[in-house]
Image 1 (cartoon, rainbow, N blue to C red):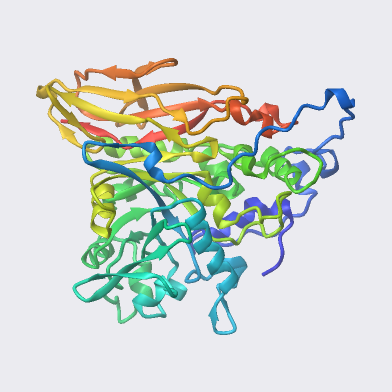
Image 2 (image 1 turned 90 degrees about the vertical axis):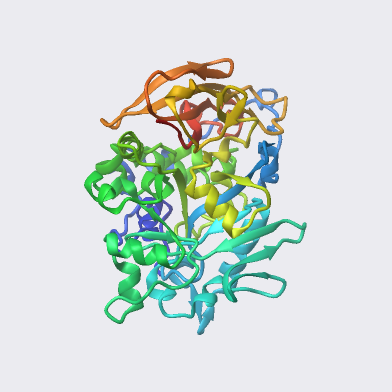
Length: 493
């Protein structure tokens, strides 16, 4: 695979999408000007500070995450950290286009993947491999189990595995695929179509959905920004992506589907490869992160029409985007870095198993946490009906006079020397128009709301992460309000 100029990150991210999105042509540094950025030599101006004017460096920003249990346990449920939509050595475009080397898996890439799961304390990962490799091997091979891994069996069949991390943490791996549809937590390969397993994986109609569900999967829709609302209605997915990271930087997606000019972000990315800027590579996410109003609108419409669908954020990690190291010596798109940026929190009942993880996702007991800005501790979203507390994802009758309540989180283990972030807590109702109607909000405290109209209501936390500004010298203009938490809805019928 041809090495990429750093400015080509945007186009390279497209290699992580489905086969319906062909790779874009290479881009050289001169394209930065055409996209609205300055010449690369001007991207990080030199500033001569007197010795007495140089501020002390901020405390080290953590490269790893603490266990998800810091986000809370209540009423028999606990938060587990999940990655949904990620590729390992059974996707043709993973590992810089070399997932297999000399007839076997690319071991350095596979070990990077496994180590990242441990370092970021992922509890469960829903793998999503492309068909061109996954359809050519026996189903158990997709898990690439190694010595010390624990098989997860059902009815005598291997349906998952667990990695035992050096520190005692354990990661549950569940197989799945991503082509036009994204079946996750498959128990087996789907039945063949036209005598072909590849055809079965690439099918994209309601019959394909039935085949995947018969093979034990939940069916998700990847890259929602590129799907019509009519298609989503026809498929009736179990899970919907409401954010996919590569859409932020691929100009073929960001411009047409998100209305977002990637040019300035592309130029800023160059700074994170140059020493002397003082920029912390962990803050690269702040450069390009834009929420997908396109995805959120479609989610709102489907919910307002009466469907129950959890919204998830897609890592879409491949280690095929930015092989060049940033100033910390680690490649820009390392599995660890991408898994560190955001995750999906599943509100699991009791022990984490394949069954409890799938149940939490199916029942919409989920929220998205953009942990690049810190782990949200203390967030909860419930409904109170009399003496009973109801959870995210539950259905409640309007006649029960439910009171919706969301509690304000704090940044886990935030160093007191850093500036304080500000945040806004909101309750939103889905509308058929695709809009989200704000029904309650607070800049300082918790929020509660008694609905008088049936509908799907979700909670959202937006943050102005001033606490990360010291890690972005020279890029203070990036400081803005961004989403920190998206909850799935509580359904009031």
